[in-house]
Amino acid sequence: MRASLNGPAFSGKPWHARHSPLARSACAICALLLVYSGVAPWSGWRNLGLNPFAYLSAPIPAHVTTFDLAVNVLAYLPFGALLVLALHPAARGLTAVLIALLAGVLLAAAIEALQSFLPTRISSNLDLLTNSVGAAVGALMTAPFASSLIDRGRLADLRLRWFERRASVLLLVIALWPAAQIYPEPMLFGNGDIRDELGALFVAAGGVLPIDDLMFTVAEFADGFDLAEFVLAEAFVVASSILAVGLAFASTMRPNAPKVKLLLTLLLAALLSKALANAVQFGPDRALAWLTPGVYGGLGLGMLSLLAASAGPRAWCARFALLALIALIVAVNLVPENPYYLDAIGGWRQGQLLNFNALAHWLSLLWPYALAYALVMALLPNRSEHASPASL
Image (tube, rainbow, N blue to C red):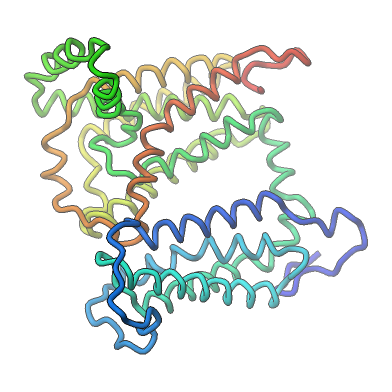
């Protein structure tokens, strides 16, 4: 059945007229994230007595870059796409696109109005326009394929053909890996550094736990780190992370899955997420500042090791993924802060696109431990049937 903007004709079969709870949940989460980012930092509210919608008739901002405009469009593109999927089958084709455009305009207009009460944010009619364009583009791109994705279950079919049935939790955590790279950690893929949080926890506990001796030992270990050792440490972290994520991903795949293509796609998504985040936070000229000699070495070593190790049995892939993850967590929490990192990235441009700084920080912090939990659960034997550990 040929895809069109108005969608295929209804066949009369019940499974050709179903809605997608996943699309509706994802759309709601996307909208909440847009509100969260648009009104961050959620402090310093003040009322200057101005009309919150006065920005609609204000002059168009003069100092706006093409990069900023493109980022504003991309920010609302997923919202428009997900809303079209969420509306299906109640609204299809052009009707769904128009609803998504209207929803994008109303959401962006409300966020810009709220920004007028924040001293660190500036309401802009140009932001409203570009956000609305993003929602419309996302809706137009998705509308012709909504029926094939939901009614005929193309995504569900690929999910069942390529991945084990009980791998949903593990797949969800793995899918968050690119998003975990948004926060600017000193090392690429250096997620899971909980030293500051542990220190605050022990201080809150009244110093009962012997954290001082532990921190003194770590400080002694950190003394004497030179540039070459930072390069080696970063290469180890990058390679360990690629092995942990890649082997965990491979442990969920069926034999007929395009394993190499899926692994490379996941890695590329993480690198693109890092580049975009750097461009937003530090400026477009720093988008690839994280490409250091240590990163090059870690990427090469990690990919070669992953391609070799992922050819083994799925159950062993999950076990080795857990070992690589433990190595990653230990390394990230032992390697001292790299002083050369700040020289490479330059100044901080906080909040240029999506003010997800606090949210991104917690995701970066907790993601490795969520993956460890998912892997441990996957390795537990299934009481209902004798299944492969990697398939749970």
